[in-house]
Length: 157
Image (cartoon, rainbow, N blue to C red; front, side, top):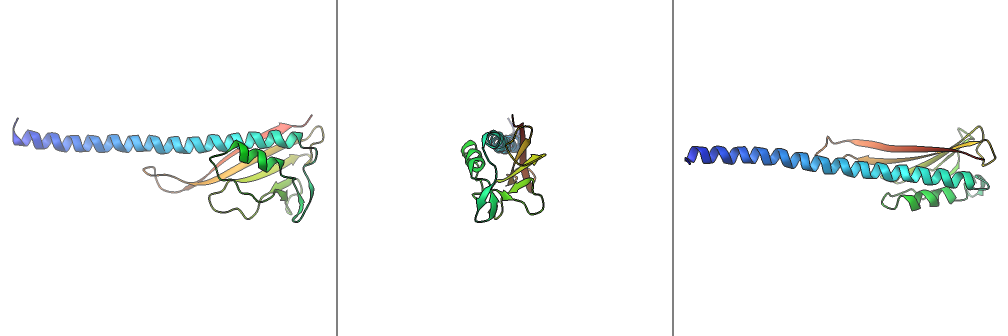
């Protein structure tokens, strides 16, 4: 083999290795995002299950009318690898049929609960639990921030 052919083979190998590594790390980054999304989905489902069996979704708290904590505990238990905000779920001043968390730190999942037609576990109501996790897109994917969000809705019996 000539020197020129050896040099050409080295350059081609370096280019091919670079492309293979880029694809490999891209698949790993995508898998990490998919794993986090699945955890958020599991949290929303667990929160909805906890909400429909909770005897009362609103109780008096230091921040006004707040959920006793069963939904927050269920979401946290179902998402052990996702940081969930620990703030209580309290009734929104803008929408009385909604419970929201306030004061979450960056990178923590936020829980929102809505009720249709009413925010209670009375028969005939539909309770929706939404979990939103802000994440940074890992390299080598295009850099940026996205919200992984999942909702689960269950009807009370």
